[in-house]
Length: 286
Image 1 (tube, rainbow, N blue to C red):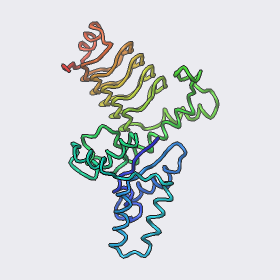
Image 2: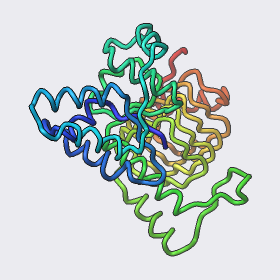
Image 3: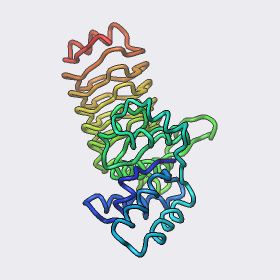
Image 4: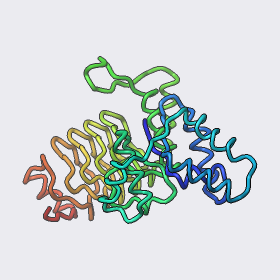
């Protein structure tokens, strides 16, 4: 997982100037050290840190800036003229954020971690808080321990029956994933039956052949998700958004669909659409 840390968040760690310092510490001290995570920052971030320390007349200026560089193992993205030009043409209102988006796209990073998500409104990248990122990493660990690809080339998850995996699976099902940001996450073929995903954001997630039977998906965002072959029987979908989701071969038997939003769905037969309407689902033209 390759992510860009927003400059404001990085500065919180070193300046300890707001309630976000704890999040910054978690990102840079804990998450950044995980082998599966690569954290990047922009060179502009380091320049800002340098000026902040000078303004505070700190005698630790060089030490603190160098510690950032050492901590990130040289993963510093230089903002060149090409990136500045892309930022100028960006729909984002905040220019610094537009530069960071351009940097992330230049380096093919798909996630920016920030405490100011509003600054990135309009970006096509995944914008996550530190808390969201930590939840995603833990979820992926649980899934990796609970499932294995067999054979490796098949792309199909098989349940791992070891005691450690069973314990991990139990943690997954006990986990409070309500409100979790899962957009774009690959969860194909996994068992999420009975999991509480209330108000979660699974926009564009790959849930192909996933078992979501009995799951709490009230007010969840499943728009544009791949739900082909998924088992949603007995799931609670009240108020959920399934617009533009791929519903090819989906099982919605006995699912609660009152006020669930559909529309623009591929793989949805006329008979199933009529059945869903009769059960209280809402269809909008897309």
